[in-house]
Image 1: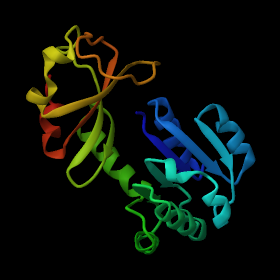
Image 2 (image 1 turned 135 degrees about the vertical axis):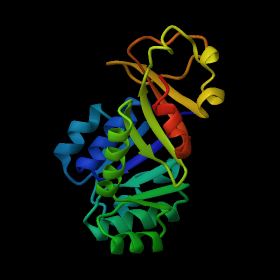
Image 3 (image 1 turned 60 degrees about the vertical axis):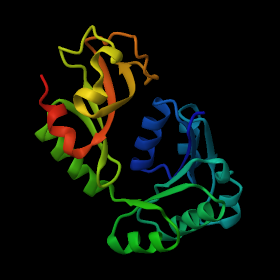
Image 4 (image 1 turned 45 degrees about the vertical axis):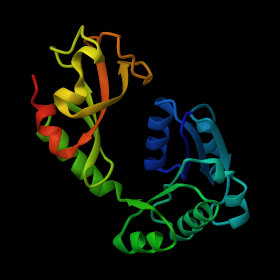
Length: 217
């Protein structure tokens, strides 16, 4: 069954997240107080709703209890962030993640129930450093202290071979989560389909294995 994720707040970070998740085939609910933004994302999400996230009743009416995860992307505005996190946890959402702009905000949102907080500026620094050190990585996403997701363009020696033949788990200690070709949406992994020159792989691995994956020719 496809994952369902709610993105509360369509600022720059929320929009980027919504675009990425929807392109990966994730069932997305996007919410913002700005009707123009909501209208823009009506064709770029599964469901788009206009709501005031400071209002408890409006947050409760979003249907968050059916979501696998809720990501609160309001950032500098503490009141709607607290309300959204608190209501989501009361409704039993398994994973509630909140965007923060300071350590104090992070502390508050963790206390009211957030399972994890994200500071995009700090994480962007980490991602940029990883991409500079490892040019073969198109994108880098940190999942926790040990695990990460990386986008890697198919290397010459992978082209024409299938996942079954390449056996990434054994060779690189990495699991291929999804594959796409340029200008095509992400798709499930077909273990028997040969990779093409423009294939891009989304892999999950332990950070300690990045060096071997990056410098494999």
